[in-house]
Image 1: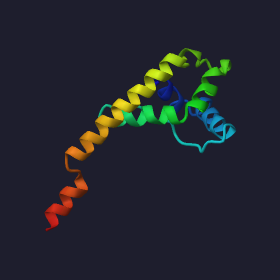
Image 2: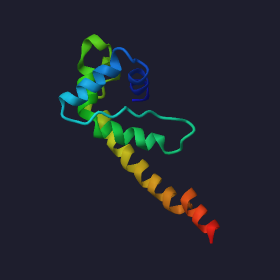
Image 3: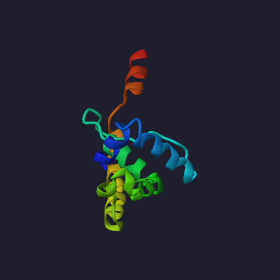
Length: 112
């Protein structure tokens, strides 16, 4: 999934316009595909949940043989595992978000 996202984001002339067109064809709003960033601790959850939400455009895009993305296509088992991973990451993300104060809470506490 990371490699697919990287290829789409960095192919400004072929894959990115095809991604835009594919999203419109399946009736979904165009959003830039997210990819995992090492410096952002919850970016894996964001990427996985995005891929699950946009599974139809992802499948359509990887089925187009002229784009050479067939190697990045996910089978049913991989989609199932991705859904399970999303649930685990969602629980972990919500736990860590509620367990530690965020910047807005710290700033409000400092103002008083």
